[in-house]
Image (cartoon, rainbow, N blue to C red; front, side, top):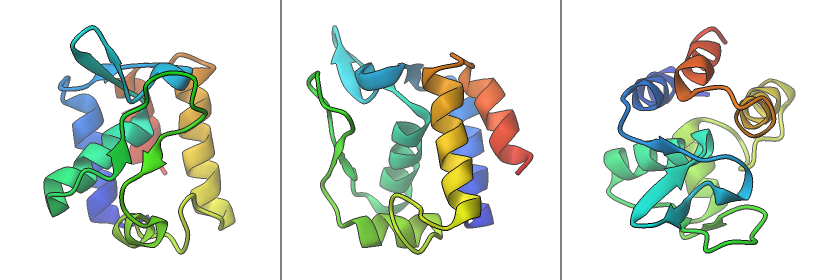
Length: 118
């Protein structure tokens, strides 16, 4: 993962700007507020840098958000060869982040600390 993108992601997770969601409620509307998983926050970092929102918001029941942009473009931004990542190091990082969010219910700050330490 690119170190500058990683830093922006960590900062965004710590910013308090994004309301955390778990499981398939992430990247979805709850009332008039969006809920985000950590990967959704990474998508917002992508949007801030490029001006393009990479995800189509989930309406409920989807396993994962659909991409508006090519997986190759998102992978290039993040600094991985594929999206979702397929090399062991990056795959483990993103998989662990999902587990920390959806199963362990860790806060965005705790997840940011983990990402920063990798």
